[in-house]
Length: 233
Image 1 (cartoon, rainbow, N blue to C red):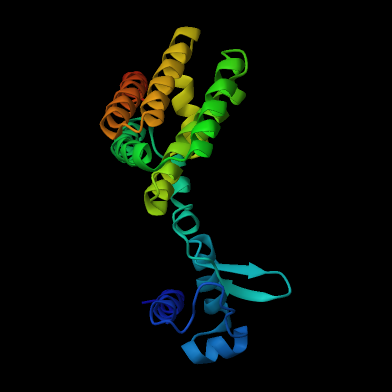
Image 2 (spheres, rainbow, N blue to C red):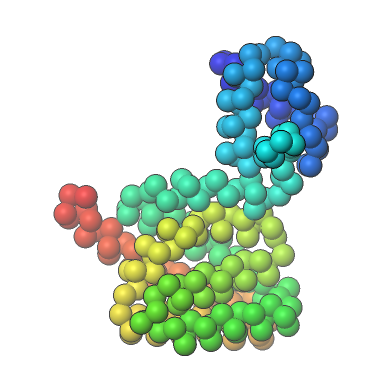
């Protein structure tokens, strides 16, 4: 095991044992290097790696702290992996997203508040107003709708996983497979059907509507992936 790995494992152990908690400030560099029996260079490398993972954050002139360790922070790095996937692997990721969002929709139907319902309705109105001529606005409204549903599931880990699988880059690629006014109208109709089930607090209906909507997208992505495969890309 390299010294950098030692740093990562030891700091992880300090957190899991409760020696360091969310928001805790790490000892100064020279003291921590001695405590972990590693060089200061290796300590810096380990700290950088943990910062990328969302475990630590370095504040200029103030030291290094443990983050909130919340699911959305720790799982945010997953979006980087998602962005690097090939069109074929993106289909597999979409399949996982479909499973997760289907469950999130069912849970949301039981737990969603009136305020969240209004926010979801507002997102759909924005998407409809944007239309095909304003791609970015329509896509962002679509992302917001799905984010609200995931958040309304009441499970922050589930919501964070869905967010990680729905990075902005991945959603841009996905949305572009739905090119054309007819496809955008279909997506809006599917979103409206999902919202109607949420308004009725019908978990099974919300589950079925979300599954159907995301399966259509998955099939579009699958067709695009086959085109890339045929081209040798």
